[in-house]
Image 1: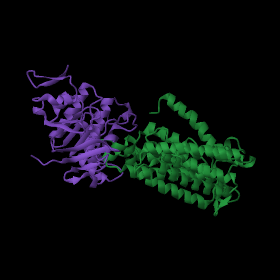
Image 2: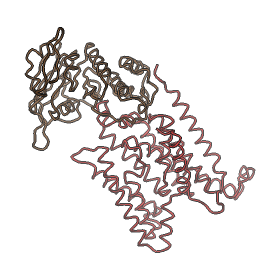
Image 3: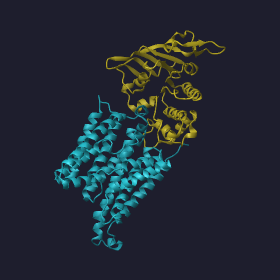
Image 4: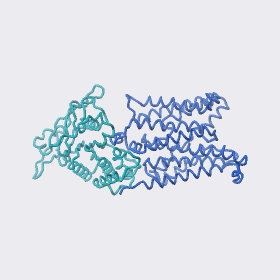
Amino acid sequence: MTPPVLRVRNVGWRVATVPVLEHVSFDVAPGEFVAVMGRNGAGKSTLLDIVAGLRAPTEGAVMLADRALDEMTSIERARTLAHLPQSLRADLSMRAEALVLMGRYAHADRWFESDEDRRIAEEAMQRCECLEFRRRILATLSGGERQRVFLAACLAQRAPVLLLDEPATFLDVDQQLQCFSVLRAEADRGTACVAVTHDVNLALTFCTRLIVMAERGVARDLPTETALDDPAWLRAFSGRLIVEHGDSRPRVRYQ
Amino acid sequence: MLMRRRPVVAWVGGSGLLFAAAALLLPFVGPSALDWARVWQRQEPDWSILTNLRLSRTLLGLFAGGALALAGSLFQSMLRDALATPYTLGVSTGASLGAVIAIAFDWHTVAGVVGIWAGALVGAGLILFVVMGAATRGGQLSSSSLLLAGIAINSVCAALILLVHGLTGMSQSFAISRWLIGGLDAIERSTLLVYMLVVIATGIIIIRQGRQWNLLAVGEAWAATRGAQVRRALFQGYVAGSILAATTVALTGPIGFVGLVVPHLLRGRLGGDDRMLMPCAFLLGGVLLASCDALGRVLLAPAEIPAGAITVCIGGPYLIWVIRRGGLR
């Protein structure tokens, strides 16, 4: 197996003296698509922020491709890791293509992006099926269209690690499927993808691995294929989830 | 292929031509008509009216309007606040307070500098540190803490201006009211030169970082994970924008509206890419202020209407018209 590109080592985070995360450790290898799940307040977004370098952990360390995250410059970090924050401004007055080109910030040390940057951004927009709105102002796009543009900007960054904080939460069902298929395809190309999500079936369908957060840490860390063999972990979300074994893949349904 | 830089060249070039045309033509606008032939032969008084008075005043208008519009677009991007102006973060109100105190106490010169300018620059410098200190917590600086600290200290300075104003005698009180409207006057060539160099240098520093302001306009987490150094960028933008606002307020008084409206109108037309928006805002903001001042010179000649009053009288209705037409995004 390929060596992990992201290592989270014994990470802890506390607000004043109240611990939010304690002893969190896991590795992510290239090609994995990890769903980070758990109830509200379980520390999913905090963990993702720490991995993205937006907050410094109070204990432990994050290693990106064998380098400590806090020793990297912001440019080095952005070349290794792209992050899609949870909610972004809707009233942006710039064009979609300008936003996607922002993903090239860490690669282009010049006032305007090169033709190579443009080609990469265009290809990312094609993969996220948003090239048709490249000249549109972001504020005039629908929520789903805008999310595709933000996702394209993250792909254009061409980072080996991709972190997404609830990328599909505000999208309609079709857009959710589309978003997760794009991410799965990205993982299949060798990117390590880590997405926070609340949708169990979406995670079971597209992700390769589930990390369930509870009690300030990782409660379960299991591969998707065998996740439903022992569905006790579902109780971490709600007591009203039932596994349904149909003719194909098992599904989770609500009681 | 995604869009190349051609529209940038066209817009910035077109704005630059307008700027140059304003610098050449506006000095000829004024209550006393200038005779081309006499100017050509450098005959008095036409030659000195043109070079000493009108040209210096036009250049001051072009650079002051440019500085305000540039600082406005910078703060709007940096603070993600469509209503941000060069005066939002308190530094220019601090400059006004310093200037008003200098007028109230009749300080004509302080250490060889005109009292109003000295007062304004000292006031701005002090407020810069106060706001920065109030906004920084545990070494962290965010645009929301900067905005809150700026607005709070802005209100305090505005209240102190009213207080000083209320406690002064008649003649100072009139001078203070007149100064607070904001307007252009011919200033010494050396002062003008220093001011223009400061504006150009600060403007280049700001515009060179256009991609950084674009990133911050989306969000701080977004900017940080694209590779920008957010805290350094906020610090740099705050200081650079404050230098523009404070030096301008020192020379012209708090001229309203240019810093809010010019970036807004351009953003509706050009989109929000600061690499194109900022140079255009600078050039067209300058053209707007210098033209308003030229208008103020002739409208009620021989009386003069201060440029600050004209910008607001024209800018307000125009903005409402644009909003009603739906041209503002």
